[in-house]
Image (cartoon, rainbow, N blue to C red; front, side, top):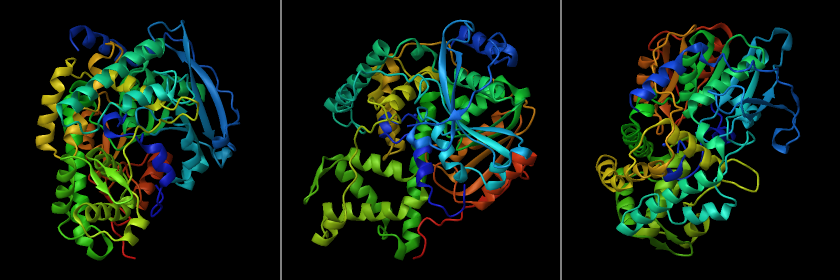
Length: 530
């Protein structure tokens, strides 16, 4: 949140960097409704054994040296509170002024599939020093993720990568579509076969219940929490399960909770549209910048020409091999997340345009390389790298209904693509694995309007690709007690704004809310002058 700081390390914890079709964001019936209503009662988790005290010790992992670490046990299945447990791993940055400590702020980076312990290492980019003085900041790996008893769908990376090799981000031909759907369904079968009993208990409902036990374990009477992206769904779910236990909840880069959990296909359609909106803004800002944007000069027409050429097939570039529509889609979707990346993104696009349509020089070739779309590993440093991908699927497929008939997805993709020509097809195929995912009744899908003890602070940029501004408007309306703070700016979740940082501090320390309708400005221009 520090104004003007290019938060590259923060980006690492904000998004699961996998291609769109496997971004773990990257994206009912009367009986279920009755069950959800019962689970929504704040006291419904009370039958579980009382949370124990967290016993902190110095972290021994290289990336967390200098911080405190701990683990705690939570029920694997909250319907069986005295049964099997699963481990939650935490890391803590203690308050700088413990004599005046207010409590603990829990933080979540989103995903789903992203571990949160590493967020303590970028605490100064999340909140200002005045907050760090008065609060412990605790990151936790949600159940099944990172160091918290990670789910694992395959024995080795090679097994997962063999399936990823059969998938396409933007499957166009009949053969590509068939291969992509088949590989996704095979991925699900691998998870069912290998991931164990935790796979059936990965929903956000359970994560929110875990969070309440973590709150108890650190000794806080009420919850202070910052959740980004998918972490906003955790915050909204917590607020409706435990409305009387909300002290200060900030949700930044918001989902529409009702749409995400009850109308996931419509949600994914609008997600694709959000990326299109921000891409269009990127291209407009590029043309406005002129001297500081390498892709200027009717950037929209140039980009569409580049995209449409790659849809026809790979292009071979001198000394660099081939570039595909998957490469372009993966690259541009990721680049929209951080406005600080936009100048370099424009330079790469111009290089690709020149290389494909003529105009590239040997000196330009020597200075550039094109990013290649590939199956990137998840978050775990262990021998198996795809825990983030596995866990993200487990959460998304449990939380939200998607069509169970794989044969429907090609038609869905055509409809998505007609509305969102760059991102629609990729978004439509991004969760095909959910078509044959085991059904579960452990999910929360409302109500969303329970009135919390304190007002929830909803924060969002006006041009957020993954969690579009419309979602934040709906989140604010759907929650029973919420206030919207808007960043007039670009990127996924708010950043580069001293104004936003200041409101974070006032809200977390004193409970102060921005006046209704408050807008903050972004302190970093998309294409700053040299």
